[in-house]
Length: 347
Image 1 (spheres, rainbow, N blue to C red):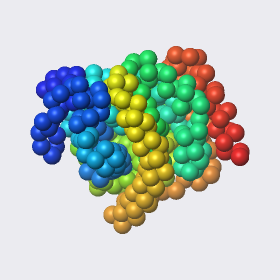
Image 2: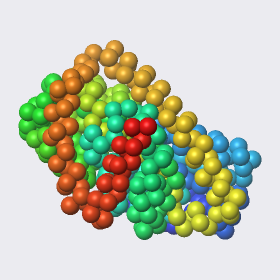
Image 3: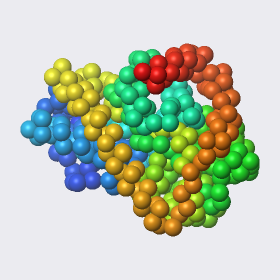
Image 4: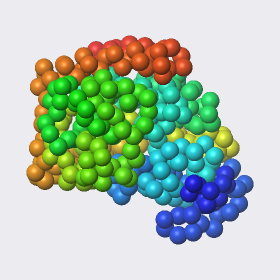
C-alpha cells in the first residue's frame, strides 16, 4: 500500500502536497508544540471535506501562532478511501474526515447512516439531530473508541441524490439497475430492496464506470455529482433525498490523548465552532451546483409524494436487516436514534 511509504506510525512527520516537513521529533507531536498534524479526506479540490480540512488548518495555525502546522491531503494523497481508515488507526495521519460507506466494514454500527429515509426531509433538522443525538454522540462513539479512533463531530454534506441514464422514479425502474456502492453490506441490501444490482467501486473509478456502462448510476450529494462531473455521463439526476451523506471528524485516539490538555481543548473547541460553519458551506455548495447541473442539460427530476412513499416503504425492511445482521448491539442504537429523531422533529 501507499501507506508503507508514509513513515509508518510517526505522528509528527509526513510528506506534504506543499513540500516536505522538517518536523521529525515525535515528542513534539505529543505536546502539540512545533508539530505537524496530518489531516486526510475522501474528497478533492474545494469539495466540502477539503473545504472543512483547510478551514480547520487555518484556524489551528492561527490559534497556535504557527507552532502547529496542519497538512491536508485530498483523496488519493495517501491511497484509497479504505487506506485512509488504516492510516488513521496506525497514526500515520492524526485526523481524518471519515464516512460510513468506507469505515462501515470496520465499525459496523456506523452503517446506520446508510439507512434510507431514516433522517427527516430537512437538512436543517438532520444537522440538529447530528449535534444533539446521544445515540450518535455517545453510544456510537464508543464503537469507534474500541478500535482506537475518536469521533469529534458528525455533520452532513447534504442530501444524497441518485443519477442515471434513464428516468428512475419507481421501484420497478431499479430492476437489474447496476448501482454503484461504496462497499458495505447495508448499502448492498438498501439497493437490493429496490430491485437493484449493487456494485462496489471507488469514486476514483466512478466517472469511467458510468461512462462505459460498468455501472448504471450512483448516489452522492449534489455538489459532488457536479464537481466530479458525473452529470457529464448521466442524463438524469433525481431529487430522491433518500439519505444524508454524514461525515465524521475523526482523530487517532492515542495521538489525541497524548496531546496536552490545552491542545486537546483547542482541537475540540475548533471542531465545535466549525459545526455551523460547515453546515453553511455544504448548503452553499449544494445550492450552487444544483444550478450548474440544471444548466449542463442534465434533467433534474423531482419525485412526487406518491413516488417518495413507494421508495420509503420499500426501504423499511432494511432496518430489520441492520438490527439482525449488521448491529453488534441488536439495533439498540438505531432504536434510540429513531426515538430521538421523533422527539427532535416534533419540537
